[in-house]
Structure formats: C-alpha cells, structure tokens
Image (cartoon, rainbow, N blue to C red; front, top):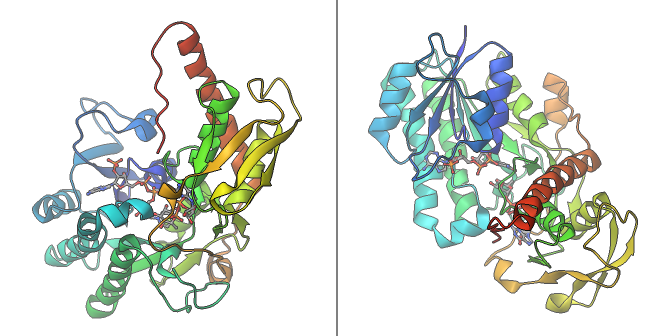
Length: 372
Ligand code: NDP
Ligand code: GDR
C-alpha cells in the first residue's frame, strides 16, 4: 500500500486529491491547521474515526511555518509521495500579508524539501509542488508553456517563484524526484468563496433566493484559462507516476474573461445579463428571464453587477492562457470537464445551498451571507 502525505488537504485541491488517492488504495495522510473551529468541511465525507483500526485517512495537526512540526510528521509518515498543496493561496490577500505569504508559500516548500533530505528520504519520497500560472504574471508570450519566462506580479507569485526554483534545485542538487505542476486556474463547487468564480456563482444563487441584491466585483476584463479541479488533481498524481521527474503546464488552452464567466453563470440560473456603461460605472443589467422558476427574485431591469474598486489589485495579471501540449504528449492528459459543465455544476451547487439558507431564513433562523 502506497503512503501519501498532502499539505493543504482541507483545501479545494487537497480534498479532491485525497478522494482520488483513497480510491486508488493509498494510505492518505494530511496536514490540517489548528483553527478555533473545525475547518475540515471539504473532507468531512472522508473522515475516519481515530479509534478505528486500519484507517486509510489520517490527519496530523501542522503548519508549513513550523520546521520541527513538518520534519516530525514526515519522519512519522515516511511518505512515498508528498503533495505540497498548502499555501496562502489568495493573490489579493498576499498584498496585505506579504511576509506571511512568503513564509508559508516559499519557505514552507523549502522546509518540506529540506526535511526529506535531512531524513535521508531523497530516494523514497516523490515530491509534487503546486506551482502556478501566476508565475507568468505580466505575460511575455501567449500562450504560456513550460519555456515561457516568468514575471511574477504579486507577493503570492514571488513566493511561488522561490518555491518553483527550490523544487528544481533539490531535483538537480540531490537527485530527488521533485516536480512542479504549473497549474492554471481551476475551480469547482469546493472553490474558496472569495475567488472570483465562486464569488460569482454564490452571489447569483443568493440573489435568486432573495438573500443578496448585487454582486460587487473588481476587474471584469481579466481573462483566465479556467479548468476543473478534479481534472487537475488527476494530473498531479500522474506526474508522480512518471519514470522521470519533470515540470508540466496544466491548462485547458481556452480563455474567458470575468465578464464571460458572469454571463455564463447568469444563464445557468435562468437570466440574461447585459453590460452597460464604462470603467467603474459599468453595471450588469438583467435583460431577460429565461426561466422564471429558477430565478424568481430576479426581475428584468435589475442591476445585479456593480464595480467596486476595492477589488482591484495593486498590480494585476490581466491575461493567462496555457499551452498544455507537453502534458498531453507525455501522459495523454486531457481535461474531461468542459467550462460550461463546470459553471453549471457550480451554480447548481450554490443554488441548492442558497435554497437551504432561504428556508432557514423564512423559518426565522438567523442567516449570514458572508461576502468579500
Ligand atoms: P485552497 O486555498 O483551497 O487551499 C489551501 C490549503 O492550504 C488549505 O488546506 C489551507 O488550510 C492550507 N494552508 C494555508 N496556510 C497554511 C499553513 N500555514 N500551513 C499549512 N497549511 C496551510 O487552495 P487550492 O486547493 O485552490 O490550491 C492548492 C494549491 O495549488 C495552493 O498551493 C495554490 O496556491 C496552488 N494553486 C492553485 C490553483 C487554483 O486555481 N486553485 C492554481 C495554481 C496553483 P485551511 O483550510 O486551514 O485554510
Ligand atoms: P487568481 O484568482 O488571482 O487568478 O488566483 P481569482 O479568482 O482571485 O482572480 C481571478 C481574476 O478575477 C479578477 N477579479 C476578482 N477576483 C476576486 N478574487 N474577487 C473579485 O471580486 C474580483 N473581481 C475581478 C482578479 O483581479 C483576477 O484577475 C487563483 C488562485 O487560486 C491562486 O492560488 C492560483 O495560483 C491562481 O489562481 C492560478
């Protein structure tokens, strides 16, 4: 039985990867952070009682900022595969928390690799680093492939650049099986609520149920290459099954704007939006209702989208488009879930959630719809 250790198991990707590895018969260990309340919602369906013998999912308290903790977990687990998915992963937040972001995302990666080396596990433990299309930042060529030069544009991306090169360096210096997956944006119903896609699908679902009135958003013109997290974690596993450690771009090769995503999400909920005005005055106005049942609190003429400059970033990554042919060529990887299917899955999920909240509210229970 192979043993895997996942940092960031409580996050979007960690939860899907844990599911995948369990389905393949792995013993899965995950690092979860201490929090004042439970933060394991995404993996609760996988939870195994610690009093049961022969568990296949085991959680360890830990933090990427704590070297001794990291080293002792790796020493205990002796993993065959280590997936480093843990990070302060929000680009906008990294401008507010630059030092912490560097500590977790850059030094956290160094701590893991150094622990593997220090413990003499270089030949045993295969290492996956969650690298990112944010490394391309101010893009130097389009589409972006493994050979495109990097130009990071945020404390997040700069910290990830350090982690990227540390991974390459440990591979070259110590002959470790260490690779970078340069993943473009990937989403799902488990996406964090403050990333733009989930923010949109949640807000619109809430609006249809009368729980919110308007979506406040930043840069509508940003374009991204959005895929589905399930497809991308499959690729993370595939990379560690290769004969040689290599770095790969993982993307769909298709690009949409934030505005496109908004229109698609609206359509999934049964209304059509038209954008009017320019700059910070731009608004999204409902022009038709295609399905009255689905969108009963939405009326033609409602202004459902407004710009709020607080969501603009000090330095923006305007456009990203990936070129995943190396992954397709070497491993036969192709994404299976389309953009349209993904948006629909996200709006359907959030609509169900909004309906539950609306039911609670109508029965007098307090409901708070957090938004940032
Ligand atoms: P999430 O933000 O959903 O998950 C991040 C995980 O890291 C959570 O489990 C979080 O714990 C954990 N974490 C945060 N800080 C620490 C810390 N100090 N010590 C230990 N763990 C910590 O991210 P995703 O699942 O979306 O992404 C996974 C990885 O892939 C990240 O490294 C991200 O930067 C990278 N990435 C993501 C892409 C995407 O589009 N999703 C694209 C490219 C790269 P908690 O639950 O307690 O907050
Ligand atoms: P990103 O994802 O920064 O690409 O990082 P995010 O969804 O936060 O932003 C995508 C684009 O949308 C624009 N935008 C907004 N973003 C947020 N969060 N909130 C808004 O209100 C809003 N309005 C417009 C942003 O400016 C940006 O251009 C994600 C993270 O998962 C990283 O960890 C990962 O490395 C990259 O994807 C690839």
